[in-house]
Length: 535
Image (tube, rainbow, N blue to C red):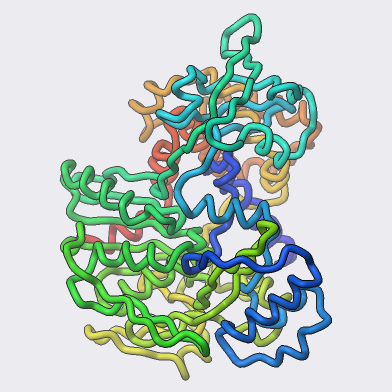
């Protein structure tokens, strides 16, 4: 198989696994770009004036010296791509959604759902949210939203989200078919503010080691983490595996707040500096919840920005061991400037540096398109799948730093882990990619398996539970019913992977995010390596 084809398969699988991981709700699909808290400043409300204002903002705030005359007649996106890969223009909807996702709450009714057979299937109801208090339950099917029939119609997901969500205090009328009911019923729910934790899961891996998964660095990450640690300490936690894989970042202050929970007072966590931004140092204040105890931080090629700030501080200060693969390499800080029409400019205003002075930003000298393909290049040259860690010669020669303990670390291209764990591609092939792309596995879980197993059964048998032979035979029939040809040779290669995916998706449905991670971590090599490193 060609390397580019293999990479495309992995990309498809990554998106599938993201979906499998429970990101069904609108806010969960957003990527955090990593920026400072926005200023309450408003600019133009039309495109012609907007370009003029953007150039003015660039001249006054951009991290580096720039020739503004060369930007005058370019479209907004092209103009920003001339600067760096992370300065970006956000249309009103995207600007609102990004801010909302990082604030740790949103306005709506508090449900997660999945579009199954052109019907909205409720996969989770947020506890104590408006839908929960109104009596909505997991397994309900939404047939109608106000006056719009949604069952049997192929509506874009954005339209579905827009019809359910809305301003606090406004009502939404839903026609629901409750699981097991013969006829639908109408439920009117008043929208409210729904709190969303940035902690996906927190539980004990064994008698003294705990696992915490952080999906983004939002306004409440520090508080959410403290609550989780205090709970885990009552269960005997003395070691911690902190999972920041696929965490795209968020607020700089959220990363420094989290680092403060692990470090002694008056330790430099990170500093930022730019042409128009004087150096700003972020120090610990002490009094953290986990200043003592062994720590392993999990990262991968999609860990970026605030995740790298935290991991870099732990590595530079010899506080924890970093496990996984080299992080993304985003060392630029954005600030948001708002326009009167609700759109916004996220402009790079500074670079951040780890305590030892490392810049984590990877090169973007080859242009925007090449930068977007950099992860594909890592895969194609074998960095992600090599048996042993590969450090680029350019990093070794020019960007080496030494920690207090004598450990050599590198700058200029992400955080290099202390313990490397290769990307496991076992079972990945075209047949599996087809199942992932067409969402056949997740459809099968919701359509068939969900009714065969109970939450209590899964919870009691999670470590030993496996998909039965009868389930697998029914899956094959389901695949054929979806007009997908079965390649028996590739099926046998990917069978263990398929079994595991069905299990973790089923656990996600019945046991929530914590069920997903409990099931998935049983076979996760990165988690296993982290536990070994904490011995």
